[in-house]
Image (cartoon, rainbow, N blue to C red; front, side, top):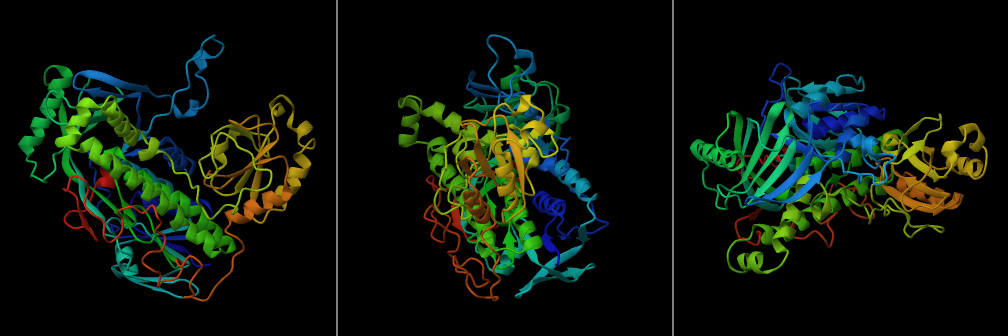
Length: 600
């Protein structure tokens, strides 16, 4: 089987290549950077904030992420008053009581885990280090893609430069950024809105009054709205919201922002070391299709977002996680069109929902003058609601930031299987990280087993107090083990003492990327088989090249509307600007490339 070609060696391309290699798929990674060229530019003000789930997924791939900071908490300040405080716990203790509260009458409530904040060049470096240990990945530096050709058996890419030539692959994924060459060669349009928000950014080393806490300061006494987010080594990244209009931000103006904020927080300007500065515009764009035959788009090549604190790079890494297991299944066993089309259905749908939520919130949160000002003053709770929306965007939760729920995925039975029961996780949502017992008897977190196989989890209270040899051959286990062994894709059987909202003998079916397929009452072999068959998209059925798939998204002459839905909102050809009238619609990026992914 020809390797999968990944175009672009940014964080998304590196993460995808690493995920494929861990699934024993050969990869050719086309990197425009020359072999003797500089490594990733070290820009302390160019950072990424990753959801706890996304950071954990990278760590499972062997990327340690040691160069990032986890926050002690979050606080929202309005004028001079703290209006919201959120303390964070460690990722290891998520879902478990803190050790120092066990056995007490009133244990502390479980704290949500912190996002991970790290410079993008650190993330890139750590991904490259992990990838260097994989012998299934060939990194080809110094070549610029200029042509693609697909046929019934694969896809051929041509590059120019010192390492130019033809590269043959089974599939190709464009992770080559906002000005994606892959997207342009595929003819996939990229409509959206330009300059939805603009920010001035600075990275500085200083002692601020909230060690380790991230801060959103709205309506400060001096200067404009600003966020301060800690990085390792006493470094902070500060982002100031700029007024619409695109006026030039001079170095003196940026220094004034720095001094105004430091004076507001510290009473005077404390000693500080300015490490990096910049200005970036947030664009909202979404490609009309993320799959064209054997070629796919991921990350900034497929979408741009970042308003109201949302995290574009995190979404790109979600693309990589969604696509990797599907391409691995296709590479090893063949794939149906439903499996390959599901990438576009799921990920494009998730981005549409994120963009629509931001578009709906922007007029209220950022609107100025007229009714917007009156509502902020007169409607009870309106301002607090805006503060909460911004906090959710920054923390990766709520409508602006929570992990996606693939409720309309084609990789699930058309109707709920017989014996379906409700649990604390909705079908299509990410499962909770409960302790499970593996086939070898070890106890790990459920999410630690994600990545390769379908997971079948039996909820069996009391198994933890018995030796594994006693319950392995008793009760439901023999019948369930036989049913799992007969599934049409490789699966792993796990046992959990409990799961939120699940009764004893509930069987959970979990996709390789951790999204729940179904929860069944007891052992139901036929329903289990139907769930597994749906997850693999049905049996692989090769079709003639150019023959249109049922959804129309698999062929290279795909309709421009493929993958769009009734929820696609303004990310079509006739998209208007935002409600303030300062964001304009265009079909391709212009000016400087967006740093929304890198900086948000």
